[in-house]
Image (cartoon, rainbow, N blue to C red; front, side, top):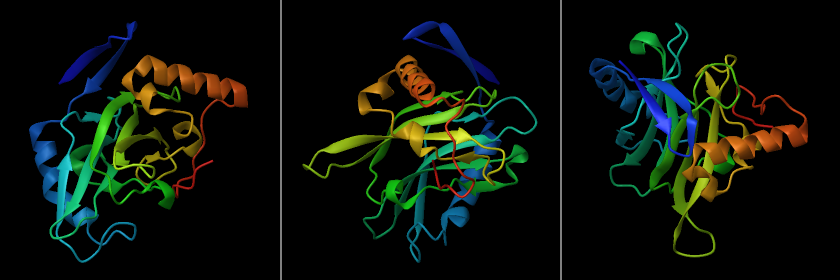
Length: 205
């Protein structure tokens, strides 16, 4: 099933989301605890409690599309909490955690906010832009840290983290897909690049 969603901040722009089938979601939920257990950058030796975001989509309708699965990760009896992106191949055969650099792999993430799927590098694949709610270093309040994941055929997960794109965004930009696109386009033009680069290992540039 496909659903066309109009962006209220940019009426001329529409994006089509390929909604996963209930059986695909069931398979993902069944496999997630095993996939997330034993990850070197997550908590080990604890019972994983994973919650998928309600708005999920395939990255495109092409045969090489990946199912995009933003997930909140908790652990029974522990305070650690992560917000990460998992992707799956067609048939949910290959489920992979997208790599993140240590400095943005927050272990106190309370929720994912302002989740948006949009093609930011013009390859026809939807990318992921989101805010992760973490405790502020300056106060007891939570702040939204913008994270961008873009499609990367060289990465095992099909996606990677471009630090250069994420650093351009302020929390206020996440409220509008039009604002996100405008900020990133200005940054690319200023830097003279076509896309924000990121390495398959998750080391971004």
